[in-house]
Length: 220
Image 1 (cartoon, rainbow, N blue to C red):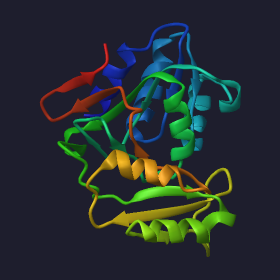
Image 2 (tube, rainbow, N blue to C red):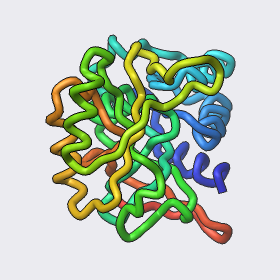
Image 3 (cartoon, one colour):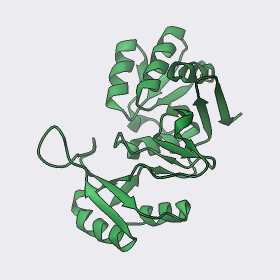
């Protein structure tokens, strides 16, 4: 299924494009197919792992700071709903992912149909990137909203997970979420909270695979 999704994504990429590539196994297949296609493209990525695979595959990488427009971007997700609200909690690189999504003409998620829902079930917590100095304040504001939060523990060493940009990664759970857009706005308005893993109004297309087929929703 992941290989089929990557092949459908490859068909959307044209010569001369700047392409955003996120992280995950499906994106790894897309990198492989893109390198074999010899299409003339440049790549930006928020993922160190994807960056390394692109270098090994001979794709031309651009530093993210040098780019202000991306033609197409492809990424995965943990959950997405019929309104194209998405939750992307695992990788803890959502700030850079959102930056690429915001500058992209089309931001396309590749997924299997087990991750596609009528409305987001929030089986995964909402991940927040938080300025270290603002951690106590952000914690108080989230608790006032009814959220429960933990600093994501680092499994490789003592202490919390730190983002690539040096900030705390915090996982937030809400027992009940009635209005996704309202919650998104409230979280984004907390001073010192840099970005969340809740993607609202950014996804333009879905490429969904199941055992029988791969199909697209949205886009052109």
